[in-house]
View 1 (cartoon, rainbow, N blue to C red):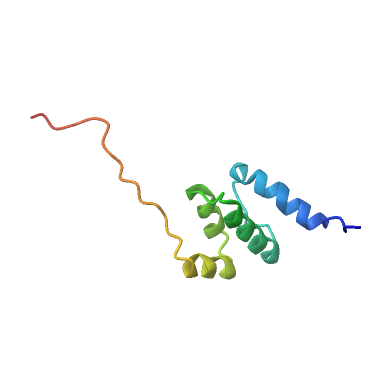
View 2: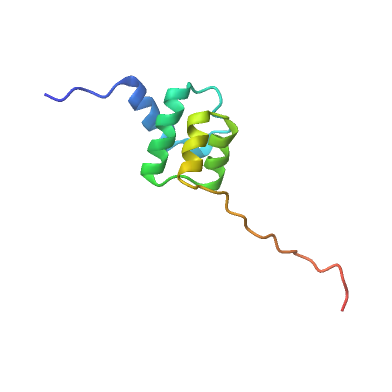
Length: 87
């Protein structure tokens, strides 16, 4: 018989499903934050917004992993919507 998943594991799974709705991850304990980050990578759910949330935590292990995997911010150029100069 299989053992049921732990409550922590279920909570991380639920957080992963709703990660785009979070505005702050800094209150999550470090070991859970690292597991959440790894599961986010495995699930292919790392977006620019979610990356910023993880970076904002300042967690050394997560920051080291981001650096080791060479994960970088996407710099999208902003094009002007109006031209203020007349030709």
